[in-house]
Length: 143
Image 1 (cartoon, one colour):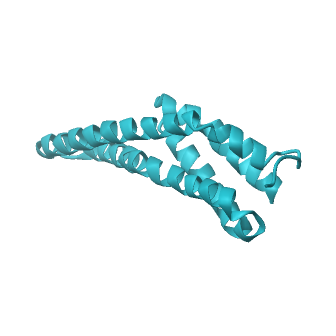
Image 2: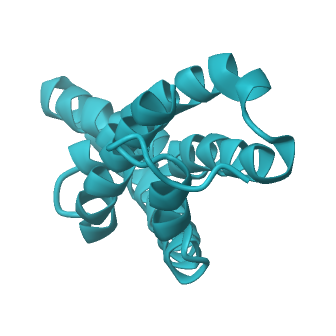
Image 3: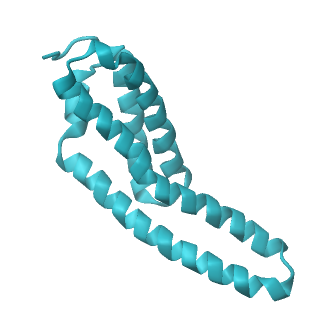
């Protein structure tokens, strides 16, 4: 399980730069998918690891999914509404445009919060800790 969890953490860390970059909405989606897979592995393995260090890392895995959710939800809504706007009758487009503008403002705020969260993860050295606790080569600390 250590190796599997290590691989799942690496999937998260690999996806984070694309999400932070913000150019492709699938970047946020990829982090959320990776974090859900990580959480599933950690949920099953929790009894096998020392709680003092495992539980905080498990909590972070849950936070990753949650913190990126607001951005992802708005990305999906904006994609849908943009398609609907294009298909809407001309007299309905101004209303859809106002809704798109509101959700876009919410997305900008959610992205700012997400970026702060991701920066804090980096500052806390979590990537290094997860690599130490869950190395892919089956060695590392277990205290």
